[in-house]
Image (tube, rainbow, N blue to C red; front, side, top):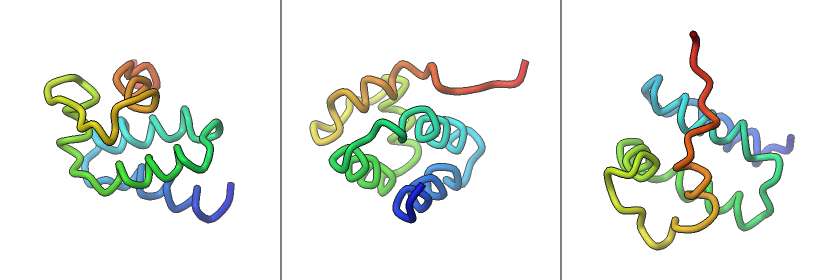
Length: 86
């Protein structure tokens, strides 16, 4: 993993709440290996948004802004990447 991806990983996993860490960090872990430069830039931009907004877009309680609509947010909405303890 290069320095840019390590920085994105850190930012994804250190959001401030456990719930945001699990959702955003889990998404990074599940999908980052397949991202191209555009998708890395889109994820970096997403990380500048407020956690409550990102989480609301993912669970569908707020409309996703046009700039984030597309395959990445569609994958985010599936929430099948979150690992929980049983």
